[in-house]
Length: 282
Image (cartoon, rainbow, N blue to C red; front, side, top):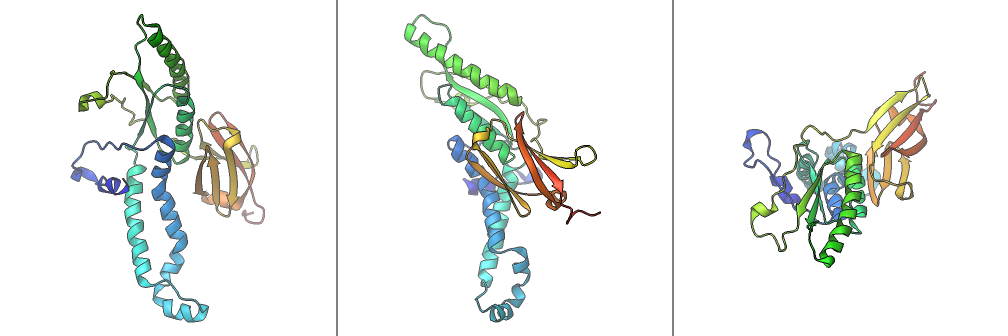
């Protein structure tokens, strides 16, 4: 799948496709897969950091001084090649025109699944274009068994609609065909034009004069306090939400601050940073 996404990374008028549709695995695995290029590039950077790569010409001398063997030239070349390939995939995943459509069948697990998708996608900065409620039964009929199933399905559909409304995401309703789809037209979903709906940025609000701190807001719709954790590690912020983890480099201004507190409010994680007197210019 990552190789297919790499092939889709064609810029300008050279692209042979107007639209690329990727059928992803279930929500939790799909979110993890979309996050994989960024994570692998981070691991490569830690394995062979830039300062170590800059010293490649001095490898024999450094090996004698350190008393341990330095990575061979082929390791640097392989890492650089892998980083380029992963970077191309990451560019496709994070492109402004890339969006995610979540398909659910209204039922007992659908609400939790959608909440997981909302949190995970937002944590990694992906755009949720729409939610499709699939295999909806007719709401009219005389069969008491089907009427009961349809009624319960409509209750779950209302819960999904509430989550979609909270994020301003359209909810598409797809009828049950009574069989498996047979033609491409039966698989087509009319997704509304969401090009104008950009990803929500992770914003830093300077409130030094009024409150004496910076406020970093991370959109996390669907997150709850029980499954949320936050750790400052050097110049990075480690965020665990809904079973997902992302390591985010701090903006330059916040690297000279200490974490003063955090709160989950209105679908966003708000982290307060106060200037460190030892690092902040006087």
